[in-house]
Length: 435
Image (cartoon, rainbow, N blue to C red; front, side, top):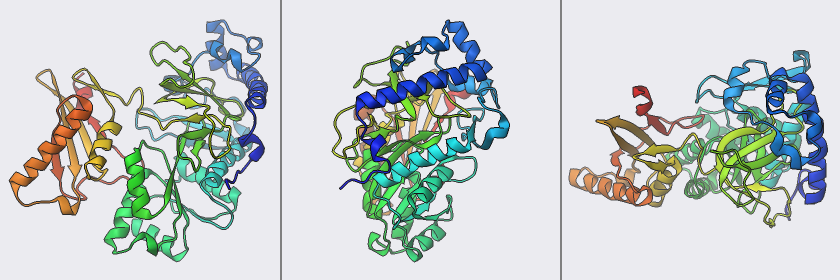
């Protein structure tokens, strides 16, 4: 029997949810217009007044906001309450430029932790569980969000943060961890280390993992589930909107339920900004309708996905989003072909290689080059040069079949690609340096 953290909200009828969203949206637009000059200017420029927004149906009239706006308004130009009412900030990793700082009131923190509690409950978590939080703590939202959610559920919470993998495994065994929360690449690394220590999933009590903060494929999910003996659940969030828990997976594992009592999702055409119907691939846009300190209206996430209201076997009626298929700014155009790192990862795992790889793109003599370094598993290593070259050619051919362009593949020894304890760096695009 599926457990809910907040059954009333999670199984609410569409009609009631739209009513709730509309009430909250109307109040939020007024709050933002009156308290944030940056937004007021954007709305005035578009000729939109708060009274033009009467319900969710009017959402499309509002202007979009993007990461560029957040950088321009840095550090507190989008703050909607006095700083004295804020109790915390979090910040993005800054992987794509200047950091973004998000502010939280106590109510914002409570609502966010509530969203994370829903995710932990959907993964089977109760007060009898031991929840090991191995996301980074500090400015990163991962650690704090799942930590707070775990407390709310009543789990025994291990605030491990990331890194020190031997200690992670020691505590996991000694304290009987049942739920692991971290990035998928770190979960894969913990699984790898466990096996190197001569241990099997039977030596730990893990039953579930909640993994997010970076893209991962279905193939990687299966591989983590096998190495740790768990069911692996996806979680989605972004610092700008609150952090992890914006959406979460249930036992059906076919997309993530969005906590739409707090966040209204839309899918738009990334080129034109036009709102697309349910079921179409486009860029995900969020409007925060309960945030007090840092409420973003129609924030463009750059994540590409599909929304669906298809009935879910878990009983939740919250709309679902697919796992992001890439980002509209993560897509590389190589020799005129759209390439997402996730496509390459799918091929690697299907061919029995590890999900540790590095993609390097360059432009030499006006032509794009694609080099992929892939770690071998110990049993794939051969001291015969001919065998290695044959393996590289076979893998290059499989990737070419998927992408339509030929890469250069370099098989490298196990453990030679730097492991990341936060978000894994998978792509180095050197072409940008030549602009």
